[in-house]
Length: 246
Image (tube, rainbow, N blue to C red; front, top):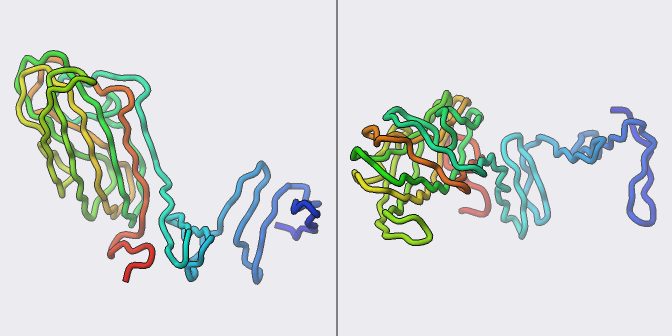
């Protein structure tokens, strides 16, 4: 952009004669921070410098902040989905989305990136005519280097807040179906807690899904407040180290 004739007032305000309303703050001819018309603040995509307290940095993949000393940390930039209205899935054994009935509610992930993810899913069914086992899996077009996640399943036959509960869990290192429950023919109310990491090779879509070993007689319902969140933490291909690890 063109150079700006700017002045700083006694109140600390920057005024500019630039008709576009854009300001680029530069050091040695390199733009480090842009304030765009409309109030948008844009950090430059640059390599990380030596960490120092109070520094906000962006390296083209992740956003970092150093609160103390050289203790640089990742600022989670979450992609996030939460249900405001419950829905009932299909009565089928094929994979389908936790979060809508079409089975293809996808988040787009980038190549060569490691992500953390977490979810809290309330799923219930008042009656079940056929015994079935619930499994967790991930679909989509993204190709993965690896994935590791844990699922904790608290289940009962009484709707919350009253729970006649049992707790089961699973650890998975594959994106394909992993059983996370025992077989059941009764009414079922589940609270599923999921957390883990995934390393993406080629970017594409990533779909949190479930499947059932048999058609239970009618679809199960995912309840209001269920959510899935995922955020980048570093580049794939090596250990992810952010901060003062040594």
